[in-house]
Amino acid sequence: MAQPNGDGHLTKQLTTNHILLMNINRIIISGNLVASPTLRETNSGTPVASVTIANNEFFNDGEGERQQVTTFVDATVWGKSGENFASLAKKGHEVIIEDQLRRNDWESEEVAEPASERT
Image (cartoon, rainbow, N blue to C red):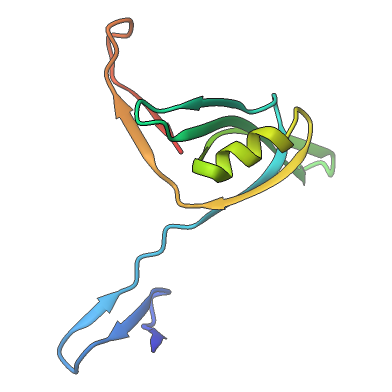
């Protein structure tokens, strides 16, 4: 059973001499779709839906004025879920996506520096 270890992390004690730190990679993003999802297939035929979500955060600044910060998050939905998502979701729809955070790096001939995205 996982137990708090005093520094905010959960640990699972395997034996009296070994402690395993539980790694969690979960992300939940809610917001509105900036555009309708685009659906493509990988070379092996796996469907992939790509979308950008606008996540709005509201807060009051030091003078009490209401402020808004918008974060744009790119997301991909794979397989049959991606097909369903692309057929049902449209620009402006509110969505909630829960999954794991991934970082993809690649090099391009058009860009001198490596590029990356989080999916």
